[in-house]
Length: 125
Image (cartoon, rainbow, N blue to C red; front, side, top):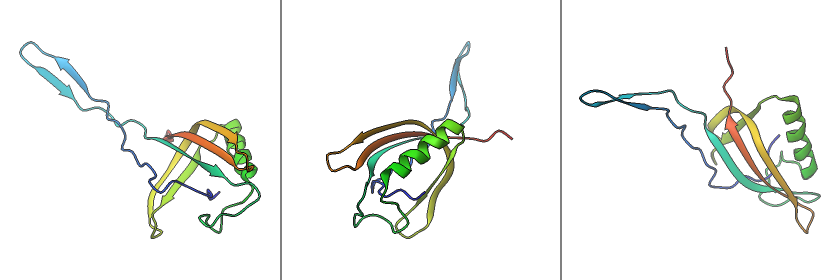
């Protein structure tokens, strides 16, 4: 699904690296660890019953469809694929993620305000 609105300053964090320091007899030693999973968090709206000028043509104006989409995926325990394109259409991120939290509230005009927290997902092969 194409989201109707994504903040223009969408975060693309780098993963934390799990390095460790060990104390030796004469000096400390550092072990370079593995890369962690990238966290993604943002806030926006799902419009209900209206199209805004900032919405891509592929986006739905039924915000409840987006809520149902995320709820179904979470209940089925399947990762989502998050794809982020820049303003020129070039792909800047294409990764599977899990939705860790989805907080919703209905605004006075009927739109659904949401905040979402996702974490990169790695398939075990």
